[in-house]
Image (cartoon, rainbow over all chains, first blue to last red; front, side, top):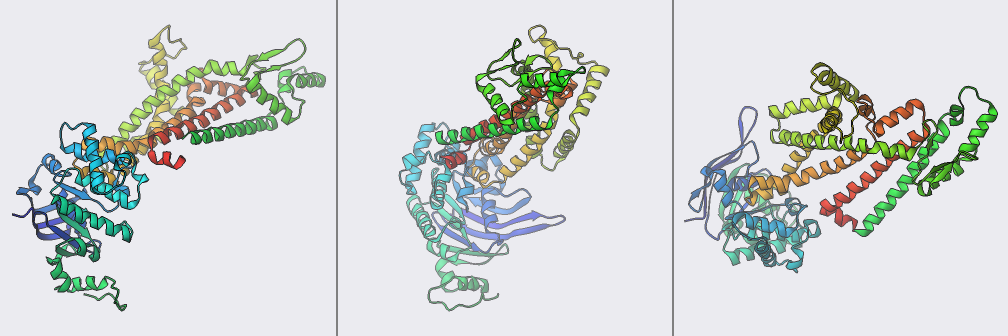
Length: 270
Length: 331
């Protein structure tokens, strides 16, 4: 049985007299410990998909269809029970680590907070230890000291490591990373991707990686979903999609990736 | 941090010095000759000269200013010959019209003004923060619009209209409140408290209105922040998301502005104190302006400036204690 099964997922925003769908009838399966890449341009609905799974859609958005996580239908779950899953069994990593961390609290507090929210009766001391361990696992040097630093005292890549540590602290079965490397520069991107791959290997957590960057998914994901205008235009194993793209849009996307042996051409229209 | 404090205190001293200089200059250059006023109707030029000499008004500006500054720190003496008046430090001048040392006049009035300011601040902070929170939570709904209408009214209505209107309704017509008469707290705490209800309300309404709007805007802004989304994604209880991740960032600026406004009020609430006959710094200022009692007007001006500057600094230091980013920028 797969860890996550999504069927006919539709997310729509209420306009004045009709609904505007931003995700239209999405289907996919994610096996345990699998890694799925969702690729698409801005506005293709990939972030809305992740927020729909988390039950964190912005006000005014509605969600229909079915999201089954480990045998539980999430769309029918009351908010209280969804909250118990959120951050514990499904964790999320966001795009901009600076604005995603609260500037008023130390990173240790913020990591420990995620852990304490889901483990009743955990002392501050234990939670702090968990935070330090999580920071060590994402290779933040001198974690025992840096646990008391504030987000602004970290570099961009280190902040994203903090976000990943936060996600890891509860040992989730599924990690959703929404554009985790977009706000980072290229060398740091590679390090963060490597870290995500390592985390997956070590913890066995499944990963949904959302990005507009094909180079990024190619390194991490084994399955690929190409989205455009709220719909899946192509899906398959990463190898398949890369070597033999079926859809013209996927080919256009692939062509848009700069290659070292490339001659400069225009974006092929679909 | 220590360097930051030293830096700020240094800046504050400079600002206060400049305020002193400019205030003194304005009163030196613009106001009518106090000697003529003191002299009264049957005056001779010789008498005026005599008074000017006694007051030190025949001295050049710089000498007079230095004399004033010196008085602030070491005290000074006024008059000459047989009638010498001791003015101990900090000497803010001598009021020849009331024959009182200005510092004493201020010290006498300041507690009353402090009571007015503290009561009003408690009221407006409570009302402003609660109103703002309700507006933010019910954004766009009836409660929000209703509060918006109230705050528009609260900000638009002038204090003197509000003061007289409320006094007419609650004291004259409904007689819910006794007619204000000055009583010491110890004699009749009930009457003492009743005296302050209307002044507190009048002062608080304007501030509460703008604080409601400020709180509303800050809370709505903060709720849209990515870190609030992160907090939700962690699966935190909504109450925790609110308390830790929304309210603290949203209310920090409100608290700091409250510090400034409070400091400003310590310099006297001129209109409110006058309307309600409260013998505070504000009424002292109003009375002194009508009588053109320059040393007093100047002292009140300096006192207000002093509170604003000190309040500003306290708020800055507080802010750096609350917001870790400011702390880092300063060290």
